[in-house]
Image (cartoon, rainbow, N blue to C red; front, side, top):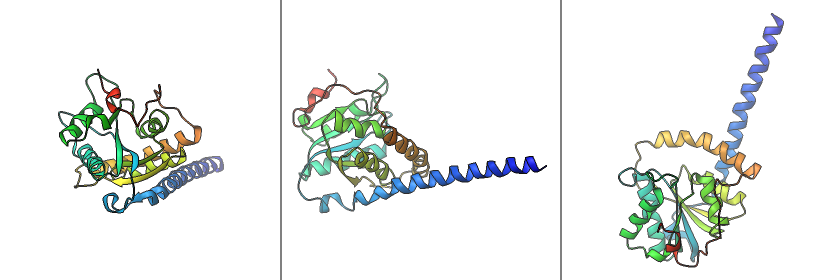
Length: 220
């Protein structure tokens, strides 16, 4: 009977430590919300080399979440707050392509083709941010995504020694917002592990000059 009691006590200790660790990671990631700018259009001064647009779902058209990120980046560009736009997302399969859908959307917004760079291997937030620095040399950026996503992206960027500020892309209510916010709990743990073990993205590659012509990154 005593042995069984000890067994359950240690199980409770492990559960408590697990939940406490998750909470602690969440707090550390959330702390990077201090790098979110309240209103980038009004509050940002000067021009940054690039805006990084993080990918999101694409079916027949870009999802509302993705459209709002692309619209926000277009506004930053049109206001002269960024010189280039990196559209990063999942293009690991021939039948699924976030980056070209994002490019076409921005071309329709009259963003010059030469200023749109595509990162075809931004399979997750960590890969997108890491590659923005290591492939494109963009270590001073504005990250464009929704409010729930920004602390994690900014946590990654700052831990990779980048100068990064967050621009909210929340332009409407999203039907799946609750699901996306819950997903952040596990995603934040993955981000914390990635930066602490110094993970490498699935793909790297040759450096690309962000000051050049973005069409060098387009599909032939």
